[in-house]
Every structure is written in structure tokens, then in C-alpha cells.
Amino acid sequence: MTAPLTDIPLKTIEGATTTLGAYAGKVLLVVNVASKCGLTPQYAGLEALYREKRDAGLEVLGFPANDFAGQEPGSDAEIQQFCSLSYDVSFPLFSKIAVTGEAIHPLYAALTTAQPEATGEGPMREKLRAFAPPNPAPGVLWNFEKFLIDRHGHVVDRFAPDVTADDPRVRAAVEAALAGK
Image (cartoon, rainbow, N blue to C red; front, side, top):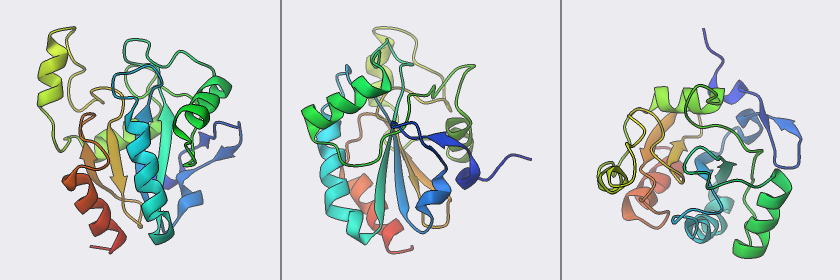
């Protein structure tokens, strides 16, 4: 039997040990992030969504990963500095992890098992085929894939990397989760 999602050990970008249980009762948008990706400007939209909805109970949680084309090569300290200086990120960031492959972090193994299909899947997968074979489903496709977890710790949605934080599908899912629907 695997540990509940909320009990999986995590490390913050500052090095503290924690779990998703620290966010009990909150709606979580878990995102694998990277500093040198064409999708990196999504940090701005994620931060805007976080600032708009955090008082209603939303937490955006960023998990840096270097799994895709070496687009997150920095140390935790470098990542934290980049996020602060470039995008004024105030949402919680975690220590760099693997989100796919043999070294996949238990959190991402649990997330992809709980929600094997992503909303908006397709267009980016086709674009990636021009460069390299994309990671097969249910694995994370690329940087900035998003998992939505409700207030009870259940994964209720997953969004493809190119579905941005201001996309109506993300907004509607976040609103529904915040409303407890």
C-alpha cells in the first residue's frame, strides 16, 4: 500500500522537510517548473492566480525539475533567486526533483497514477514530436504540467503544459475546487 498523497515527504527549496499535509484544507495547484524553458513565462500567470486566489484557499506549489532538455540546470538557491528576481514569485517552491523516468519522485508517481490524462493534451505533444519522441502518457509531458488537488487531498484535474493558469479550463476547475464542488 502506498502512502497517502498528503504524507509523501517533500523538501522545500530552503531545505526544510514537509509534506502536502502542511496544506490541509487548501486547494493545491502542483506544477513542475523550469527556468530556461519556452514556457517559463507561465511563472507570471501562476503568480497572478496565486495572489488572486490564495485568500480563498489556493496554494500554487512549484516543483523545479530538470527532466526535459536540461531546462532547469540551476541549484535550489539559483532557482529561488531567478524566480524572485524575474517573476516576483511568492508561492511556495520546493527542492528540485525528478518528475518522470526511473528517478521519479514519489509525489509525481502518485499524481500521474491518480490522474493519468491531462486536460488540453494533444497540441503540445504534436509540437514536441518535431524535436524528440515525447514522454509517453501517463508520464508528465513537459515542464509546467499542472495537477489540481482538492481540499480533501484528491487529484481532481491535470492540465497539459501549454494550458496556462489563465486558461478558462484551469480557472473553472480552480473555482470548482475552491467551492468544494
